Amino acid sequence: MEEALYNQWYIGLAIATVIIIIAAILLTMIWVAAKRILKLANAALGLVIQIKENTKSIWELEDTNKVAVSILNEAKNIRDHAGLVAGSLEEVETK
Image (cartoon, rainbow, N blue to C red; front, side):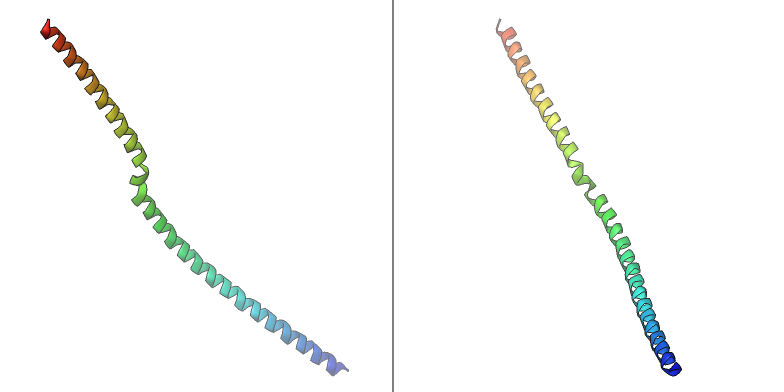
């Protein structure tokens, strides 16, 4: 009877050892995958920063468009006022 108990104990110990080894292997695989993900994420972050710098001028186009519209409006005002001045000069010259 004692021999059967020892056999069951050794079988349980062997099963526990196998489970621990499998868990250790799985944890090691997860750790390696996490390191790979971190490496790829760092590479992607570098690319994101580069893309941000390369597209900064596109985001500044809105400001450029606002300034261009302002310049156009001022040019139209100058043209209109120049027309008024020219009209006034013609009236003065004809009198």
